[in-house]
Length: 468
Ligand code: MN
Ligand code: MN
Image (tube, protein in one colour):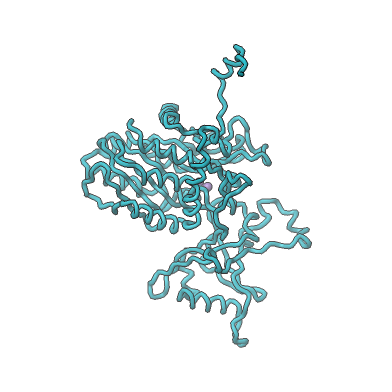
């Protein structure tokens, strides 16, 4: 028998708000989230680089009946099209029933992730070991990367112009590669370094060989055997590293974390944890009111520069060409469009509680997170969505039963971070930051709540299906 609530208790219920745990929102929500994350884990394992994620996404789109976008073509509502930008970005769209003058619904996430790229002249031998020099990509904490099994992924152009794809360290039975660290017995000097110099950039050298080529008459016999094996496997020579893009990433596969299996642990979840739900939501959208545009972009981690970053025109050119073929004014279209800029945010970490302000933090398990603004030092570099924009998206999510939370990334003036939101907003498109909270973000093994991943998917779906 429930006791009658006091006046004060009733008022608290009526007037206060605290974000609930997403798992409490429905009886079967964890079951659904768990099933959803099986596909997500496959996406993570098959797409460890932007090129691989693009190829995998392209296959998913083709399997779902998407046609390659042909500029100038007049499409009808419900038609599904896609285009690939330089093997590193995906743009997929479903044509809506409304005129494109009324805007499009964009969902943009990124599929590049922090990693170690090989330098242009990477291979050397020292102390009868062969190693590859790297230059880190994105914001990594360098001390986290030694003693982690690594795989190598990328492309190399041979002398004859042929392009070779490399993927080694992932399949069962493959060798892996590794950066070494000093033993604690000899760590006295290194221990006095500041954490950000615990391992320096020039110390991130990957051990790739230890056996010499058989001929004792040559120098650098270990390097020679490594190069000979690379030549046997891929037909490449040392010079070909100059025209290659090879990325070292953790070889570990995505897996469940915790006795209750409530979390996914994997490399590269920033931002594939938003890319996969966004792609599935796009694929499942049938005959939307507004034309939906799902973008999986590259180069977010280093500032969105270059032809494959969101500062390039590739997404906006796609929209302009679509408008032109359908007799729509692209300026009107942009002005009326809305965008969910999907990127991860920090999840509150109780072990490092002082980095956060608890009342305005986002938590693993409390649903997909939105952020009115990101940035650093007084919101610098933030797109800062208007209250009207936040109102639109939060109502949409509430109506669709999406559990969401909001906050800031950590304590004021501790750091901060940006997203692609400002590059979309620069085109006069109303944009809101949204994404899954991550523990140990940018580390070789990031953690997310399965229920939050599922809520991100529900949010993207609700946006695609919106009628106003
Ligand atoms: Mn990100
Ligand atoms: Mn990031």
